[in-house]
Image (cartoon, rainbow, N blue to C red):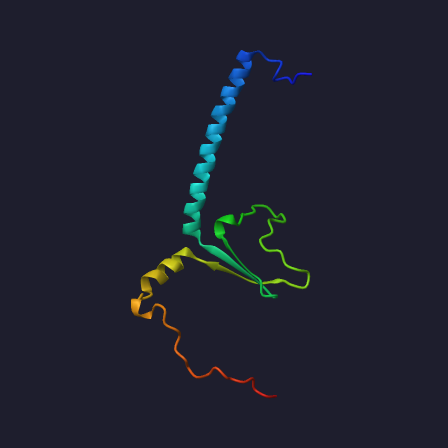
Length: 128
């Protein structure tokens, strides 16, 4: 038994195949363009940092967080166990990173050096 497409004449099949190829090229171009826009947004928008009470940390680009316009459940960003919960969320702005890059002095002398020893390595817990 032939499929409906196979029952068409070669000329009609060719027309559909050409249309499919042009749509496939347009789709690939659209995907490529969207990926470029997403990369540009990642650099401009920054990131979100989520922390759980159990110590799990998740860092993801803000461009991956969807905006819900209606009161719906939304999308899960971080799964936690029943005994665990998300305790904080922070926005890490790309603008802040740019400011840090401009104001932080970079010195070749400091590279590879260990932090200074302040002598408090053996601090004991206070006794109750």
